[in-house]
Length: 326
Image (cartoon, rainbow, N blue to C red; front, side, top):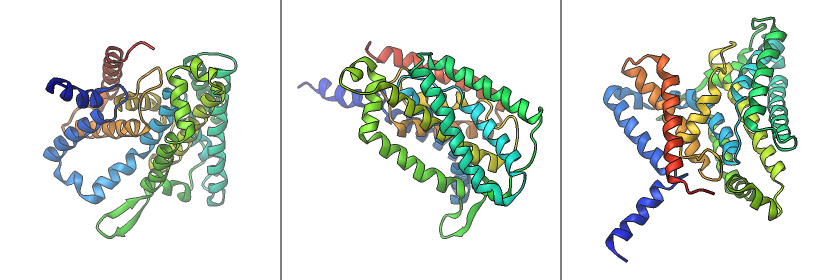
């Protein structure tokens, strides 16, 4: 074996499609730039607060990952988040006693939305892009109609604590947000799920659905479960976002594109079959770090959409060059 061949192999492993290692490098560079500009960003309370605020988009990226790695898209998550927040405010109407029943209802609503998306896509064979775009429009229109164009009611303090409260006076760490405590077990569950038989089946379906079907995999069921997981992730993200920022028709605006950007930034290949859920979540954290850095340097927040679009185009272009034809 030549020296060139020996060097090429580890480099190939790092740069192969779906690898999470490149995003770790990008995140490290961004963190260094943040440290140079804002050294106190790494004080435990400030850093944990940032991670807590990033929890919703990290969860959405994990949910979007399940769908994308299976070879589909979910464009409905942003409108689902908005619908969940508006519905929660109207049903709770500032009554603490309604908090937990409504939380359970939101999760059930997320499951139902994902189930409809999955069944329409798989059984009726409607492309997921069209299915979830249609669901996006249905949810937006239904929420406006139901609320007469303006959010009504209010979220109880018990509901809002998930997104904006924290455990104070924690040794060393100082302040630990509830949102971070919600994120960590769900992120661990997502990783364990992808290491299970279901995770391997999901990747196989995304890589080649026909081959997976010939080996006995129920492709329609696997992809439907992926959509359900995305709906549940959106429901939890809505609870955290509603708690942090309150009720607004803009609560979930653009989050579907943020989640897709995070997924492709994390090395997940659009079209399915390659990438890790860890990479997708790291992509979301990297995206939030980039936006924080832009804020520290006084760059207009209006450029966020431009940055996301550029990342998606670049990631797809790189993947198309590096990924062999299936």
